[in-house]
Image (cartoon, rainbow, N blue to C red; front, side):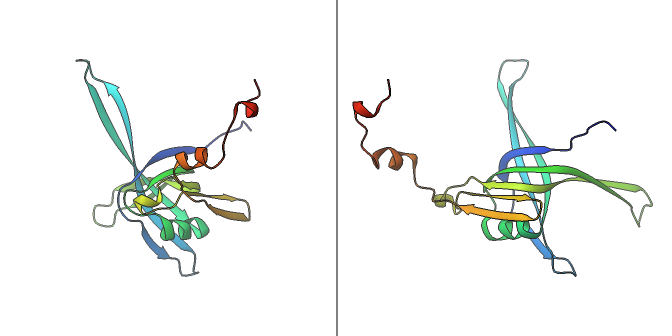
Amino acid sequence: MAKSVNKVILLGNVGKDPEMRATPGGTMVGNFSIATTERAKDPAGNWTDKTEWHNLVAFGKVAEIIRDYVKKGSKLYVEGSLRTSSWDDKTSGQKRYKTEIVVNDISLLSGRGEGEGGGSYTRSGSTASFDQRSSAPAEDYGQSAEITDDDIPF
């Protein structure tokens, strides 16, 4: 059998607060959307932005992280896979389809000033970890240690 890949990588902003629920078995489920924007020149040479909306779903620990740290406007880096489901519409009898991204990994990119903490969550197999790092401005790092000419290796 030939190798196949189903991987989605997104970097964008959350459109509205995530909708959270729990399955009858107690598994947390979160649904939310992310907007990504591409910039291109139109035939007249003007820059235009095209925004694409992506529907995402997260389960378990990833959904809990989203519930606790993600809100409208949050900037996220997301890795996941595409999943398409279908059903028959009860009123019209037509076949309906929904494609969404199942979130596997997430990094929170918004700063604390934007109501979020920078951090990342990765789900791999049965292990899970969340790294909530301080989102101190980059300028603070450069001033925390003095660098002299002797420290430069060239």
